[in-house]
Image (cartoon, rainbow, N blue to C red; front, side, top):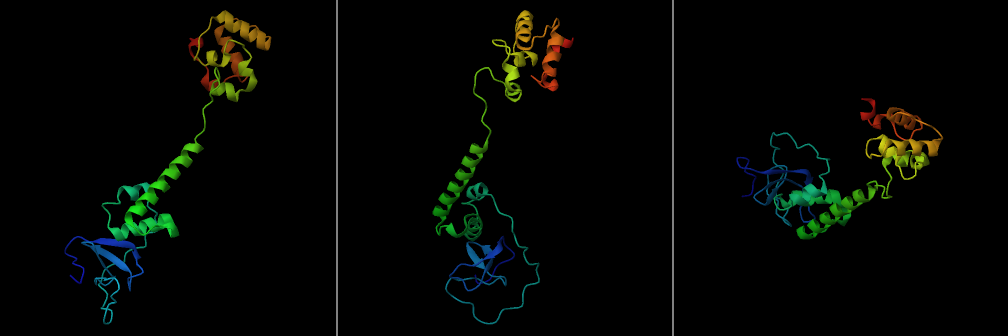
Length: 205
């Protein structure tokens, strides 16, 4: 069939794509064949003859400047029309885009892997030193002054010690005597060992 059959399903190619062997860009695809803006069949290496017909009174496709993610394009590689697939691949791979479909799929897979590796490297690394908590890191050396007692972890309710050990740790580190658990938590907040929002609440009951 030399003309697009608009009574059947067909695909729009946006933006229009023109291979080196085409004498005009392809706007539509139907049944694996390409058609120009005037619904005429495009045959590689064979120029169209005669003047252009009067354009069909339809809305011209709007330019599609949105870049399809490489992972999405790769997932649709076997279901998308070849012309559309190659056009989208060229947007992503640029001048390095291979000619064959399988080579393009491999190149897209490499691009996806490179992005995933970059994202993995950009993730913050968790502190691995034993006994350290996030508040201990941000609170500086004050959080470690309690010796064997992790005052920051106790004040946040993450660890439990005999209160006498907590009193001794505060007395040793800050030369401060506290008599109540709530006083100890308040004091550690004042010393910026922990943030007030992270303070354990059971001592205020």
